[in-house]
Image (tube, rainbow, N blue to C red; front, side, top):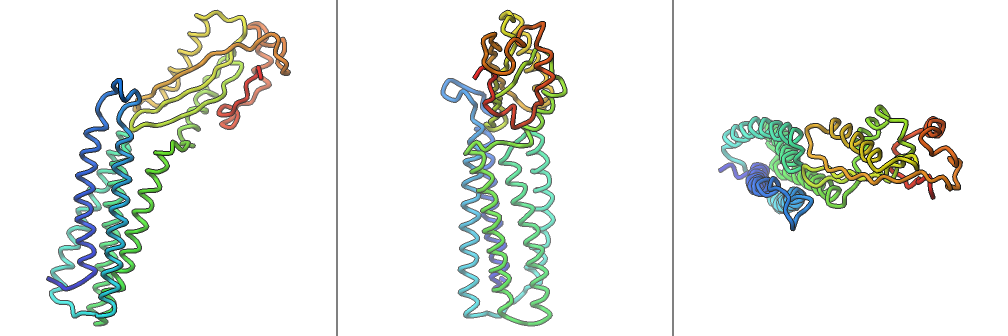
Length: 298
């Protein structure tokens, strides 16, 4: 109706939003399925796959927008009924921003990367649409035909960047990249609730599959602890971690090991339950130390 490539670009982006929102819906329905024999870690990673496809589609839309804008730049056309287009775009700004904010809040509440990605995408679309409206207003004032194509090219570059950011976040999740904030929270709660019997904690790893956190670590205890004593220490350690991540599903695996009497380290003779206090006081725990492979028995 308007003969504007920038309005066309915004419409194309809205179509991509509809497609990706439908994909997100299907992914969420699959992601909430309970664990089974074939998927012992759950189905949460389907969200990352859906978000990856979303990032690719956003990127394709950006390329199409830039290509069309360059073609129009060589052959600028006269815009018509631009006021109607700007009103419609103004309505989409309000709707996309509010929906994006709602999706991000729900995504944070339920730890859903799909909802968060979708929300960020909607909000970025609202910002870019608002910028297009401002640019078209400038076109109305100046009458420069080429301005419409330039605006579309800038918009296309912005869309490409949005797609890149979505892909970056999902690839990070698929590659099981460490979550520094979650690790910091775990180490903090361990340090705050540290018990005298915990000679050492090391080899801490944390992975996330959808809404489920998987925590694995080694707990070094005095060599003369009974199996029951070691079990109780592990139970307490699990309980404080689950309290820290109260709103998330947390799967914790703790391997207990003895601080042996014949250890060649400086903790020799300090691993019995009536002697480990000095050992405990000497050791200063940090993220690097707890996630490292600093076994006292090696």
